[in-house]
Image 1 (cartoon, rainbow, N blue to C red):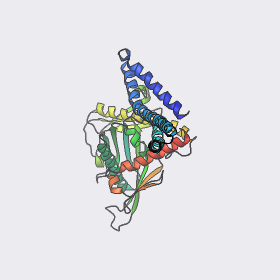
Image 2: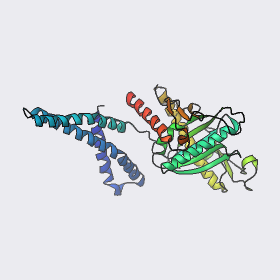
Image 3: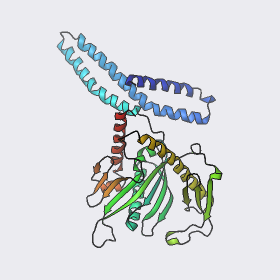
Image 4: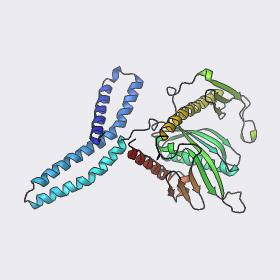
Length: 358
């Protein structure tokens, strides 16, 4: 489809949506929310279309003036300068429009569930997992997102065996979805007397938060076990069986929650994570089918894929999927410069999709 046809199609869709919203009194709340969200998404695209068409119209007028300037050198110079400027502006405006016209990931606007788990490397891996969890917490604060810790399993020396959080805000999943995978750290542990560099790893999973309408879970498909919550070292932190373990029998997915003193609150949190994991598993299956038809996507999406290395002696962060290196490790870990890595990943993904016409 040509760029002109795409522009016409978008403008026509905006008119259709506006017509539907003009009769909002006869619309259900869910339809009203859906069409309002679509109109909001269409607005920046339509604004860019109007800019492209304005530049095209002004360029056409300037070229007419060049042709009609005749023997008037001042008029010719002015018209030619105007035409040259507009010729420079048009490709940039068209390129920006093509990015806006790329099909959006339907989950981009969703909130996300973040899961960080210590991998190989013992205590050092757990400390690195805690570093990553804090990095995302600070990154969320920078963007004005809400970061709600759902569960943390500590090691007792400041490390995390695993930690889970819900992150809520604008375009959370769009910005964090490329963070899933194995993150590797190379540094000298504080406990290393000989000054040797150790390599450890932690796994990050970013799941789009699923709503009840997205995933239907039958009660008969669940096995729910109650147990007594325990803290670091195994000591009891509750005298009642308030901790909850839910197993989804069809998929074998298991979720546990014990942070709350209320069994009902733990169950609600566990169901929220379970719903997200089931939704993500289906999303991963669809992505795997698409990936078989593509060759250049940003990463495989495989959670076991090593995606990034944090080298402390060199102050370097390297994302292996796009061969991107940034010598701002301290600022990345602080959540301040993580945007630079994310922006590079998003740009690479956009360039690939533009090249493939996806």
